[in-house]
Image (cartoon, rainbow over the protein chains, first blue to last red):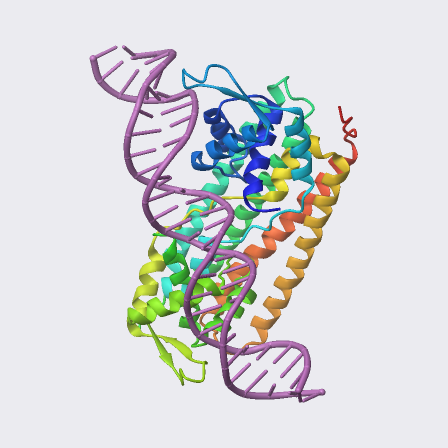
Length: 184
Length: 184
DNA sequence: GGGCACATGTAAGCTGTTACATGATTAA
DNA sequence: TTAATCATGTAACAGCTTACATGTGCCC
């Protein structure tokens, strides 16, 4: 699966749930897929244009007013299934926190502690966000066929956040026992 | 912190542990930072050239034979500390597994199960790899000043892997109770 | 002498972000 | 009427991968 196809997958997938504008697409992806996916306008609009050219989505509503809704077509749904069945594109990891900690000797234990505390705070926030999404899903009577799958990704976010919190607590305890770096 | 600087951080950081060739740099980054960081030759060599130009690293050994060792300079160490102190560059998440699961209704429960099982296997492998690294660190009498920090990143990898395994087991149980998608 | 690991580098090209330009609609 | 939000798009650029070109040293 070429990299660019992953954006097509995300866009077609979101439109398979409901038709919406490019702008709404961005918000939805940010709010709902935010903890594991990301797309910017610079990708969404060209991708929509390309998908329209291929007949995989349809533009509805007045183009002249500058606001149009996109809907997935039958071909689009078929293409989506094809794309989803392709092997995952392994993401290249780039964790700035762990990079800094790895060279923490140069940075010193106090700065490391600050970084870990910040990471812990972000994880706690994420946990709260996941709870909110879970609640939303419970109260939403639409999309009952999709929601079991959505909950799987929420659960993944919760597990990851809890793991981060547990690790941060351990790490803070370990850092407290480390000597301050004597800057040579 | 501009994005390109992150590669400089990784390169300077690795050279702060010990001098080595560009080739060795790549191997070290892949083996030791592999679970949270990534650099390719296409970045490493230009970065080394740029760092040399700025006097942050020194090239030692016969250039003509095609094999030279790079060592960090005093200025390089200062620069490294400066870079490490910069705020983290938030990585844009792109998790192909969760993207597929989110649209799992289109993909069907069986294909989802295969994906989750594959992810579980990868996590089990990662856990084994982390154990091996831990063992290596225990037996290594060099770098005793750095190793406490290295262990923090190993621990992060272990927590993440265990969280993935726990999530995968829950998810597989949940998927077993889902009806197969009737393809319309 | 053949193959493999070590070693250095470049160039093409893709992916993705950011900043900008533009305008409609809505609420204060 | 002004500001915010909704909405669409483009262009420049940064970042990174991949493939290629090239050569050495060592072991079998």
